[in-house]
Image 1 (cartoon, rainbow, N blue to C red):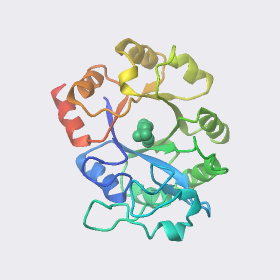
Image 2: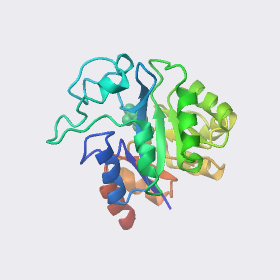
Image 3: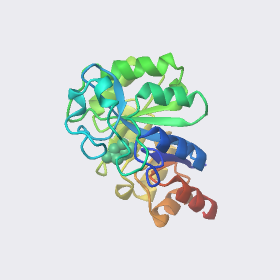
Length: 238
Ligand code: G3P
Ligand code: CA
């Protein structure tokens, strides 16, 4: 049964990567959430997509130049009525105690290496005992290999922007149990063969009915979507 993972939370209805977007995904019936993490100047893991706060908040500048106390003052719901802070990963994990959702943590360490990020993320996952509910992904494949070395019990999945040849061989070679390809780059037979080789396939970011239905028909492991309500509807119509 294909799982539905809400991309940056239920981001078509709530401000992306906010607690309300994650709670909204849970209420919508999603199986899990996807979120992005960066590090503040004092080493707190915060949930925000861009290296800069400008697009999604009322602030300006790089996440890495804010302390946690400073960044918490920003409003991550700048188009909405009620102010919402940028969540810490710890805050998300506290909320995960109240449900059974899975969480795909995308480490945004392609531009800035965020030294120590892998250790911090893994320490927090272990503190909350969430090893079986987390998938760590990144476009930085060196980073996810490092995560595997630090914590082989936690699932990893490389993100791909382009199609690659025999992705199941590649993922096995880096000990990843899944792949997260851009949905438009992966044809049906590659999805099927990858899954037949024991590798989970969770394409992103799947928002059109046509694309959702294709993946549900293939019994793809999961879809990563901005709109879990639409995805659930398409799943029922499969
Ligand atoms: O998880 C896949 C997707 O989130 C990667 O792209 O830019 O939305 O973080 P982006
Ligand atoms: Ca992401």
